Length: 327
Image (tube, rainbow, N blue to C red; front, side, top):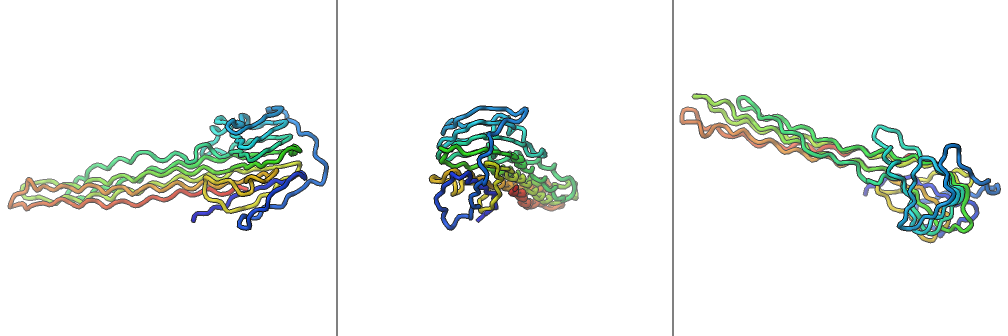
């Protein structure tokens, strides 16, 4: 069984958190932390930060974050609410670039039922390699083996994840739901198959020379799968308290909702995700065709030249490296 370590943060804060006991098989969650001081003053938008007074999210009508820095006065997440990052934000991510930084402030949060904040890229897998390398030209010479096939194309790496800083002022007194912030890394793309080996030579035909055909070339090695992306880094603060991280077992992306945000949990925020898995290896290239010899031309004095052997298949490529959990 493939298992990856994931990051889990749980906020059960501000004195209004209740939660059903988790089964003993589940990873232990950090205990709830209650601020000793009264609720902090209302949070305000920072200079230059996009500001929205309030928003209500429903199942089937997702809340789409358009700005990399935004303030919301009062948010209401109804059962089945999904919070998404816009295509504009995701398009800023790319291989070789640092993670896109998103800063959000929720002054007041009212949750009902279970909601999900998706930080993962909408596309689960990076692009796979397409096409097969060209076959080498036929060998030229006496009983010469064909050239080895070319190595297959590599898969694309998963795009870097989002770096989210989320500050929540307080839970609304009517709040009784939960939120899962999903941080999956993008899986690497599959690699391409190795190229076919070159055809063996047929050898030069002369009056007293009728060589055998050469063997076909060995197939090319499959390409290497793309690297999986790391999970998103989330810095979560609720009512002035920074919520620590907790590790738990989780499969490779795509991950499933943790037990702690199932129905019956109140004012629980879980940040959980799995790293992207490395892309699958490319298949072995096909062995090259044998040289044909000159059976039709060879007489009694020159012998009967035979064709060569089919080339051996190449080697399987390598799976790409997997991402890691970022805390």
